[in-house]
Image (tube, rainbow, N blue to C red; front, side):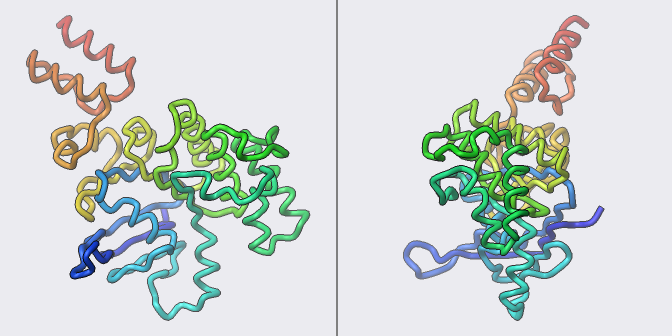
Length: 287
């Protein structure tokens, strides 16, 4: 499986508030994201996860290390602007607040904005807009005003705008953080559909454990570095390590961990499906 995004020993620093010194937001980070993967990146505030997202999307440039997108190095300072523009089309980004990405007063016009700026012919733009709205389940809202939509619907329109540009990878930077539970569910269903049905690589920056458990791979950031990496089962079966990173764990795992300690049970920790959790607890107690 080939990499769509690859970071090699990447470091980046922001000037701190008093401008007297620099602090590293990322420190020697190496990361591989393969084509077609769904990768969730977790971390406490200030862990570097959003900085990593902005570097992958070429919003920021690393101080050191190398970044590759679709096999081409994007951290090369000698790259022509036209080359940067071409590579950037491979990676779309959906931000936390959908209002910051919606630019038009009609849904379908907003979705068409990106392809128009890419110089896509009008007939193909029409097709892309229809397809993108259909994928996110918003085709019936094509002529609606975005400001009249719910938060989850707005975010799905923002996602449609990215899909219409046909990127190979979409980065979601805390894209469900401002939504209510229904809106989060709508957006997560859309993300799963993009990955499983449309085969788009997904990078999800989140602090919701119930979102991360849906990923193929989970990366945990701490103090600008990669702290843990593995499948959801592998990562969430180490709750003490996650707590040291300032993170919570799924409630099912927290419950199993407490029962194992209090009742001297040996229930496997890497379980986050509630029905499976209940069955394992029942079986363990009845032994």
